[in-house]
Length: 329
Image (cartoon, rainbow, N blue to C red; front, side):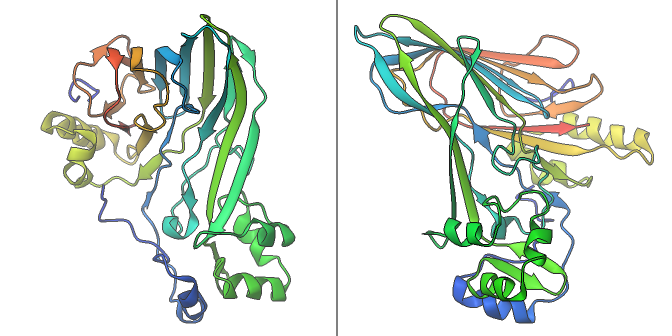
């Protein structure tokens, strides 16, 4: 959906390090050249809650709000059976591959290395305490024990991670490099492991009753420096039409030294559909943040509902595609 203010496979991304097998990493540390800059960051495409498969719990409605700063979701579930259903509810963050991200300044939302998106949840309006499952891995092997023994957080994007690795005793740093967990080249340090975290709790669904679950988090947005070719290179990804591209370039021409900022937020709709049947009513609200901002995404039939907000609704909805939303601010 494009036009009227709502409307890169970017060939510009460069990384310090391509993904390497563990056997190649020691050699890479010895022969790596000087680091190159990265002009685009990768987003982490988070999504909604997942329920352990249950044939009796239906999602009556989902209200999804997305801006660049915040994602909020409100679900209404109904247990259609005559028996209580005790179900595992989980919010998995997408896996972070530090070697793949290179030196992209991904800009995680919080200094908390575990809850780095400030995730919170509530049930029927009351806050719920979530449990956390973390895993750090390399080549499919769990390396959490090694990292903890070195006094390192498991999240490779944790605040000050490079400094923490650089401050380790020489023998520990050498072991991390030899085991393929970090690239250390002079003053340049890059962790190379993968990290996954899931926030979860067990939830009871009484027979015939509605249960309202809400959650919010701060999305990890992708970002790019301004370049005109972005609007053609990624036109299909964000459904950018010529009118939107012209509006963006006109904004750039008026901005002078105050160059517009390009961000995008991804949201996974298609995974974890383990409830009984389609979503009864689905409502999506997009907030572009300021009236002068531009936003584009692939969704036909969006209606403007306010100076900065747009809405799309569906009944008996089976999500068939995920969301990627481009913001020009």
